[in-house]
Image (cartoon, rainbow, N blue to C red; front, side, top):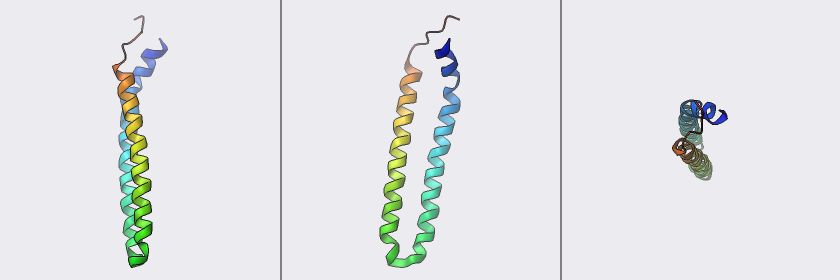
Amino acid sequence: MERSRDKMLLPLTRAQLDFASVLVDANARGAKFWIEFWGPLGNPAKEAVDAAAEAQQDYLRDLKETLEEIEAQPSTSTR
């Protein structure tokens, strides 16, 4: 019974992960836009933003892979 309820939450979880991915990209672009005003002094900061965004995207990818593994598991529901 518990597993079937978890499976019902999977589409919502997938949408939340997609939204989080979009937020990571938008925040990175916004941060780099403002860092551009620093000129050449901002290059290390832009690299740091890129590295942080990539780490967050990697984490979100891992979560999506885990979600796909859960989706692939057979349902143990008694219904």
